[in-house]
Amino acid sequence: MQTLSSKAIQILQQGAPDVLRYEDVAIRPPGAGEVLVRNRAIGVNFVDIYLRSGAFPAPHLPFTPGKEGAGEVVSIGEGVTGFSPGDRVAFVETLGAYAELCIVPAHFLVQLPAAVSFEIAAASMLKGLTAQYLLRRTFRVEPGHVILVHAAAGGVGLILTQWAKHLGATVIGTVGSAEKAALARENGCDHVIDYRREDFVARVREITGGDLCHVVYDGVGKDVFAGSLDCLRPFGTFVNFGWASGRIEAFDMMALLEKGSLDATSPGLTQYLAKREDVIANARDLFDVIASGAVKVRIHGTLPLSQAAEAHRLIEARHVTGGINLVP
Image 1 (cartoon, helix red, strand yellow):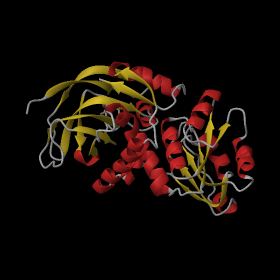
Image 2 (image 1 turned 120 degrees about the vertical axis):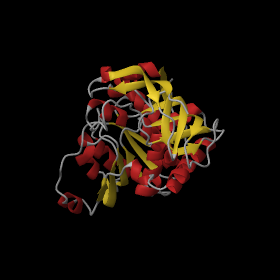
Image 3 (image 1 turned 180 degrees about the vertical axis):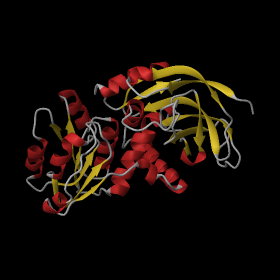
C-alpha cells in the first residue's frame, strides 16, 4: 500500500498556540494491529494544551497532537479483526488525531452506533470515557450520594453532572460565571456555586446541612485542593483528574486522617482502558447514556482543522462551555 498525504497539525517545538502548524504530512500504511482512519470530527481537550505548552513533556518532536476523533475506516493492518473499510468508528487515547488521516491502534478503536454522530463521538470519547470511569469505577456513584463537581460547565463537567444525576446523586457544581451557572443547572446540577463570588466550602456546608459530600471530582487542581478536602464527610473520596489551575503541590498525608480518614486519588483514563474488553464495555456504557438522552453532549463550537490554534486560545481563556471540535 502506498504512502498517503494528509493535512495535519504539527508541533515542531512546544510553546504558545502559534506553534501549531497546518502542514502536509506523509501517512504510512497501517501496521500490525493498526487501522487507518479518515477523520470526520476531532475533539480538542486540555491534555492537548498541556502537550503543546510544555506542561507535559513532548513524546517526540515534531508531533501531531490530539487524542480523540471519529470517522471512517480506510484500511486495516495485519491481524486486525472486527473492522472493515467504510466502518463508522471512534477512537481515544491515540496521539495524532489533529489530522485528516491518522493511524489508530485497534485496541483504542470502537464501532460507532448509528444513533451517535461523528461530531458527538469526537466531542465525547475522551471526556465521556473520563466521566464513565470517574462515576462507575474510581468512585461508584449510587442513588443518594452527594457529590461536588468542580468546573461543572466544562467539557467533562457537563457530561459528569448529567450522568451523576441520571444515577440518582445530588449534584453540587462549581463554576466561574453566571452564564456557566445557568448551563450547569440545565445539565444536572441541583446546586451551583460561583466560586468567584462565593466561598465554595461554606456553601457546601450550607447546602448539605453540614453533612458534606461523599466524593469531590476535581478537574481544576491546585486552586481548589485544600477546600475540596474540607467539603468531604468522613471516609469521603477526593478524585483529581485535571490541572486547569496547576498541579496539586505536595501535602501532608496526615491531613487525610485529620479531616476524616479520607481517600485521595489521581486516576488516568489510559489505565482504565488497559484491557480491550474495558475499551468496548466503557464505550458501550457511554454510547448507551447518550443514545437514551440521559446525557446530552454540548459542542460549544466547530472550527476548521487549520484553526486549531484558535481552539486552544478559546479553551485557555475559559471561553468554552462543553467541547470544541475540529473538522478536516
